[in-house]
Length: 173
Image: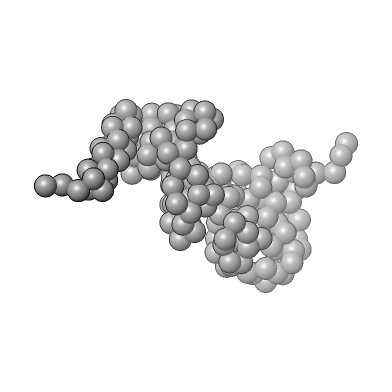
């Protein structure tokens, strides 16, 4: 009647739905996903985070994007990673903005360098008071990566990053 493969797929889908059903709001899903990540339970974290993202939780979307980026608990998928990290940034996750900015600036974790996209994400992240985003934005402005060179604006964003506690930017006291 049903093949073993079909039954396995149904069981896996029901298992993911059961995990996702363990949370009631986007914030609840995010909190539980974060706890699962800390415990190293990546598949459960992914299911919970995806449920939280679908409910509009920006930080849950950042978890989904990062898990796609690293291939933890889900098959590695850079396109899906970019989609979820961008969604997280636009929903208000400054960390999501910073992760995606760094990936686009450095061309790492399977991302191609894309200074225009990096500039957009860095600007959003810096507006959300994320030190890493401000640091990257300042560097991009100073070097003219994805924008006209603007050392004054770049220095201002590096100062903002320092004020926000970006220790890698600030000179030691």
